[in-house]
Image (cartoon, rainbow, N blue to C red; front, side):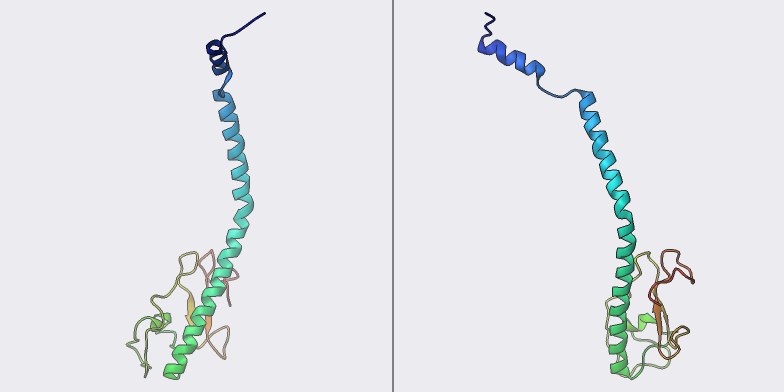
Length: 145
């Protein structure tokens, strides 16, 4: 009969316990592949989220432009731009009852300023407000026209 004392039994178990370096590296490799594929699959969602943020920003800015119009009987012109919501315009037509309506003019998700024109070229009966999109140039990639 092969009898091991409790001390020897613990020693033999300790020798078999643990993972080899190869097993740890294999598990880390599998995790890296799974995380990489998840990031790749979610990358399309980031673009959709940025476009939704543009729509949200345009709605918020449009609301502040309407408030500006209610206070001053007109919207800022193209020269005054969206900065008229942050600081009082120095060019004509000067607002009659100017109030600071925004802390700062937001940038689009790609770091560009929103395009504002009054009177508009696209909406000739109102104003244009849109993002240049990921390319940052006028054209088909513009969002919010």
